[in-house]
Amino acid sequence: MPVGHQLVGYSRVTDRLVETHEVAVGVAFDLARILAKVPSTDPDCEGCYPLDDASAMAVALQIGAKIDTYAHEYFLEGYVA
Image 1 (tube, rainbow, N blue to C red):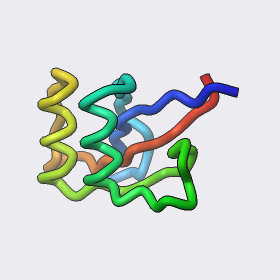
Image 2: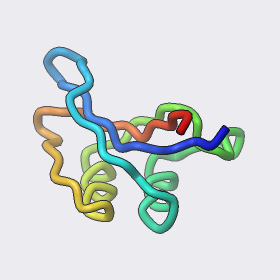
Image 3: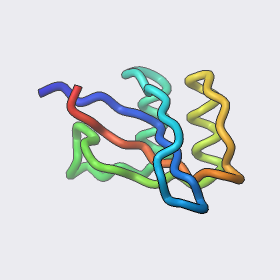
Image 4: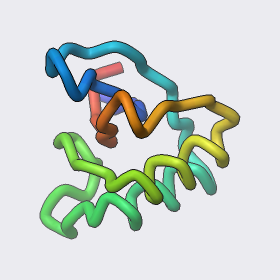
């Protein structure tokens, strides 16, 4: 099954999912994978990996997304496409 990837934001107050942004295969995904420190044991990046604020902003810039690192915490998450 093909795996897609998203930059997802969760509210720092409620821990609820509040936003998702598609991260297409290519430069943005390669950057996100490095910044999220995805281990070699997860070659398809199927897991959920936290991004610090600077890393989340770097990924958001690559994909053209506006994010709020003050209000939300961000992760690189894989999903079955």
